[in-house]
Image 1 (spheres, rainbow, N blue to C red):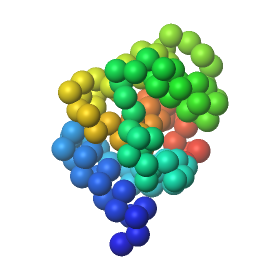
Image 2: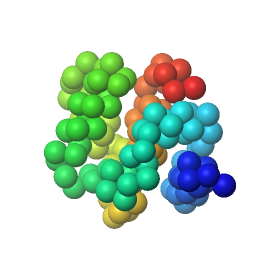
Image 3: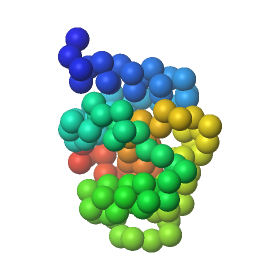
Length: 113
């Protein structure tokens, strides 16, 4: 099994624990789009307690990658994903975090599949 396949298996296992339905094509596409960052212990997770990290998610993923307009709604969606993944969960994998954001913008799924 490749490292990429191991990462996908880990994400699926985490999603099952959080009772998140899995769209395998979307998860695969988002994970692939993250490139080598999924292999780094630091960059493969999102820290919801770090406002700068959340601002980067909003700016680099939601605005630049997804092409969304900056608005307070984006902040609300980031906060909602943090809560959905669990405030005490220290394993908020970036691929799952982005997956949940894309799920909020159904029209953006096609960017990854």
